[in-house]
Length: 343
Image 1 (spheres, rainbow, N blue to C red):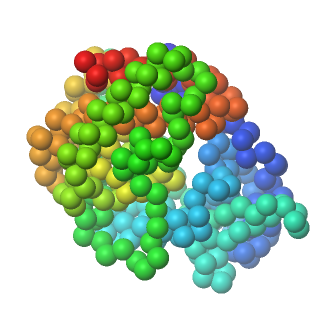
Image 2: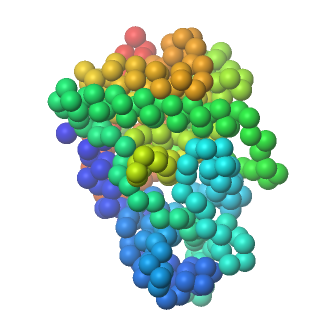
């Protein structure tokens, strides 16, 4: 079983957000004058996602965000970027403003409880693009088609980010050197993960030292660095009647375009189909935007960067069922990647 299958199988098991959110979600609905809507929990992992069915049958998605992951300014910026991408022609779920015009609200289950950010999006029908675990030649062909679409849309997102004048107050986290391998990485201090042996910590730190040096040399000029989605996988592209919508901007922030590329193909590292998937993504990307060979040459560095962030993710969520199930496979895979990288 590969890493992606493990993540999929554990998607619904986390309870890190703690309290039952139904009462909180009900309170949030009042901000959209939707008290009479039906409410069904679809997913509860990083965020809790509810399907909202209004009395007339219109469906929407209510998101209750994990506490303290993004500031209010950061969440507002995420929603503004989604709206701007829609206007640009990269389709994302429509943001449904609250009755007072706010893009999101804060709600509590009961008076005095912690408040949570809640927003509402138009419901997106459709199936995830492609099948990441394809095995036959026919399925590999489908997978290649999917990754050409991934590459094309990724390039359009990068084009938009390069041209877009950021609104006043725009704020998002950064997948920069500090955010990936600094003293306080965005997804956690990976080297403190107690599932790592001292030798594995030394190995990852050696890889991180090389990585920091190469990223500093690469630089952050606009042709290679800007706003990125940071989770550009086929399952975050939903297709319906020929339309493709990009979803799940939770991890979006400032970073290298190649970090998006590395994220998209990370789960194929070590598999025979890796080269075919990468080639397809690059073909699609280059239909919309230049991707220089010297940028592609740094792919091992960005795969290593992505691996370090996944170790940090497990460290900061180590009490969850998902992290406990994923830890052995992720640690083994990332340490193998680090050995190759350091050699």
